[in-house]
Image (cartoon, rainbow, N blue to C red; front, top):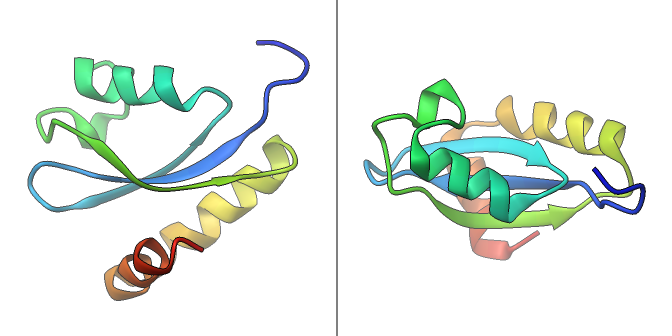
Amino acid sequence: MAADARWRVYIARCADGTLYCGSTPDLAARLKAHNDGSGAKYTRGRGPVTVAYERLMPDKFAALREEARIKRLARRDKLEIIASKG
């Protein structure tokens, strides 16, 4: 991973309508992994997966904190984040 890699928090929408939240320095590669079946266990068999929301974070630790915060939210709150893009 390059030293200048920027971390992102994302919410992915699975083909069955469920949502998955994650963080990564390479969103394109992570999305490919989800859709190839080599990503998170949760998304296997739920593809195709599309990115519904993404947010650039200053570093890995901020991304992990934000991912944890979003994962604790109710589905309706995650949908509000997606709708507002923020």
